[in-house]
Length: 422
Image (tube, rainbow, N blue to C red; front, top):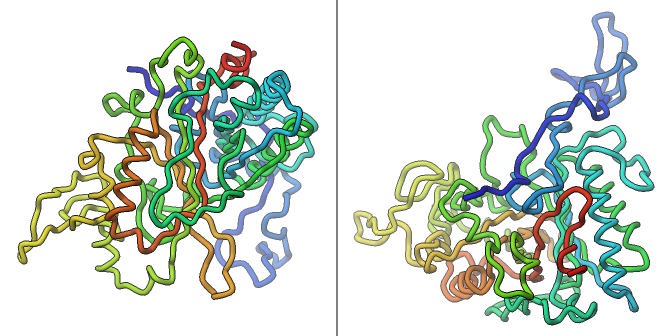
């Protein structure tokens, strides 16, 4: 069984530009000065040094290859910054125009993810390396009709069904094209998004954009699973590429027919903007929060014991005879063993877009889930969560989209080529 190729990362500090900065060690003065032994100001924190500065760190020099069997940004470890965008085709944009755009986008992404300047580089990220940049492309169901490819639209690429208590904003969902840009540096993500936006002029315009963030590499004493804005470790039970049948669960490994051959090696991504009602969440105590999730808040371990990645004992009962992990605990309701093995690879990011007029934070989770078939994974799991998840009263689903994500491409090719030129 092959494992996803784009997840491999390499350090290329020897051939990318050096990040020039002066770090602050110890306590600096209120003005942010670093003071030498003579008492003179050496440099402001963050200012370039004249002596060549500090070599580009591993964080900046890490490259995730763009080309490969699968697109990067799916099994790639989550970076610190993410930008999600959907695009609508301009009136008159046809199949040839979309093919030309995907070639331009793929060529630019290959250069940018290698730490090289993109077309018309404006030097926004000139001092940084690749910073684990990934660019991932997808197609919405509406694209196929607009470019005369309705016969080649996969059966699974259809509008997601409505779920109880959804409060969806149509303007912030769906779209003809989907782009995910992730990196460990905010300027690198902005530079990539700006390059793609300029290349799309005349063919596609941005329908919606959402920005997310995760824990920065090196911020914790040891690598750890993402902690969400509720303070809970999120993603502990994610499938891993080394798991049996991982590829079959996440990627389309066999075409459904001659019209779908282009999709082999592709996947589907469900995107949901989920607002966390944090004031309500903060209004319950820690023990109650842990019962809602089924895990300890500090370590992410199941309430039945062990560590974060220990298997939960869903049959265990406490001294009172009640289930330790309650029947409506989030981890139980969402677990594959209670959903006929349904599996998704979740790769979500937190977001915070300020505060509402009531003072409540507009914050939560940009839910991103990769799967080989949404009808077998996301849809049945979400239906079950909507019916009986203890976490549901603390969430509001505000935007939703589904895209098909083509396989990766080889050097000289472009993402979606076998569909658009087939």
